View 1 (cartoon, rainbow, N blue to C red):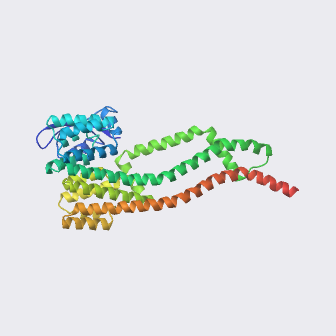
View 2: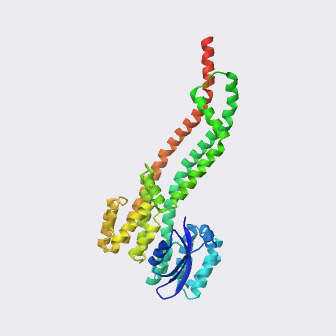
View 3: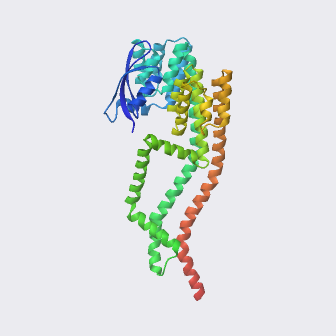
Length: 405
């Protein structure tokens, strides 16, 4: 599981900055801090299981950060100073946690830190892309433009995720409802019929006997089922918390029928849009790739990006190492190559992201239209099968009576 590490670094101006970050190891912390342009002085692991800053991070949603970035950019563009803008934002922000963070940002800026340095001290609240883009905006004197670009990036990211979630809500609800009805029938309805079956005598049909056995097992051994489910969930979380385990599960997700292609397209969209936003904001390409690898959302994609970064560091272009990875289709590689040759890499990456956004939307729509009738069929077979199994003994009795008559 990730641990909390306290760090002390020196920025480019020589100022010493302290903070805390959650990571799998001290090495990954050092790598991330160096990618942000800091000189690492000290890193130590904290022993507390939970910290105040951890609880803060959970309470600040991406939506809150998006609104913060857009409002901040608007005020800076209007000529409002950074400290004054932070004071106004602290007064009008609804999230109480973010209010406290903004107040701390203002204090740090008033104490002489740059905005990016103040943001870096709140790394649990602000993701690396936010901090690095703010630093690039300060260096280029276009902080307002960078913050607006950041807000648009967050909004696009949230929009595509929202469409996927809303499209899958109905199928998931139907599936859960089906399983709930089936469980209620097996646990409460089948025992009622069992008494009647006993009075009839004779042997039960195979389907009915299987249903009765399942009902008896669930009612008498329910704790075993709960224990097995809990053990599987714990095992998944534990394995997924390791680097090898996460890579295994993420590679498995990419191989899933239909859903694997959807996950891959979403990952490619996220990669392209994030890298485009960072490059357009003036973040150095190696530093940008570090951030993209950390925020890829899939260990397989992340590994491919890190391998590409190593090749780029040695002097290769971006497209060449990406072409060796099965994750990146030839179209993506070719468009990136054209972007590099024409000096419009950010524009090409944005076009790739827009293309895959449209692909994801179309795929989600077709997937939803396919899943709905399949789930209705599943519901009919599940519930209908239980009902038929319950009435099979009666059909047998009626058949015998007709034969005797």
